[in-house]
Structures are given as C-alpha cells and as structure tokens.
Length: 250
Image (cartoon, rainbow, N blue to C red; front, side, top):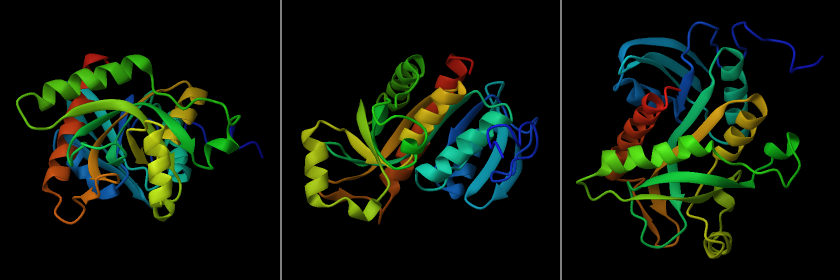
C-alpha cells in the first residue's frame, strides 16, 4: 500500500475532517483545549471534529475562513495533522503554541517568532536527509513578526525572533542539554515545529510559528503553575497569527 496515494479527498482517519469543512489556513495549537481559545476570536464557529488529540473548529475572522486544529504533543502527531489537513484543502499552517526560552531575559508571555528549527526529533529523519532544513515560509515569518509587534504595542510583552529547537524528549532536557543549546544561540525549545516545517515544504504548504514563552530554562523561571502571563501570551500569539493570515490572504 502506498500511503501517499490513499485517503485523499475523504474524511481523514486521524483528524476526522473531510474536504469542505476547513479553510485554506489552519492555526495549530498543541493542546485540544486551546482550540476553543482560537475560536473566541472567530464568528460563525463550527465544531468540526474531535478524534484522539486532534480537535478541529472552523469560523470566520475579518471575513476569512479560519480553521484551528490541535496537533497533540510532539512531532509524530504534528506530522499526521499537517499531512491530513493538506489532503482536505489547507494550504497554510501556523503553529500557535507554548515554548521554553533558552536565552536569559526572555520573560513569560513574551512572543517568540520562529526563523527555523534545529531538528532534534526523530520524525523528520523518516522524511528527509539529516541536513534538510526545517524553516518557515519567509514571508509568513516576517508578517508574524510585524503582526506580533502591533499586537504587543503598548504592553510589557517583548517580541523576539530567532532559531528554536524541536525536541522529542521533554524530560531529557537536562541542564547540560539546555546549556548546549543556549550556547548555540537557540532562542527557545518546543516539540512540534520541525515536523510542521518539513511536511509543509514537502507538501507545498506555507508554514510559520509564533509561541508564547511558558518558562525560561536558563533563568529557571516558570509560569506553568500560575499561568496568567502565559494565557495572555497565547491570546496575543493567536491574534497575531490571525492578523498575519488576513494580511497575506492565506
């Protein structure tokens, strides 16, 4: 069986979505419980599907049809989500997630725009040569940065852009590993973007990522317990992604 040839233009096996139920652009939070947070910005919202870790809702933002689909945690489920969204008509994907900082001075809730991912995952190795780059669409990355700066204007939220790490093993990020990535100049670390970027390139999609800082692994600070600044960062990142989608007519 050639998996690349089966299951096209039908209801998808994992995400449970069929053609006609999505827009051309999808925002991708990791957590299915954050899909309704995207939906708060939309009108005429429809709850499309919820299967396993993949929840999908669709609505309208400034006249544009927007889809939100959760990827779950990590590159394997992210690759599946992007593959299946592409099969039902999505042409652009924007990850809106959480990410831990790897440089001093990055605060909880700051907005982090990705310029490319260090592939510390196993999924993308199944797709491409180890030297293949995991990078966003250039125009989309630049527009995400501009939109984030507009959204954050007048607040104490900083907007930063740089290279990030995509890692498979959350609890294997020891102080030594963190220090090594920090010395390389990596801005932040998360678990999904490398698969999103690689699959998007292979399938002809545009991709970008904006994350809210959830903790700083160098400074040792975290908001996982309190969460107010992180929640504000999520909403600001979602708004910036929606504005970028409209500006570029994705």
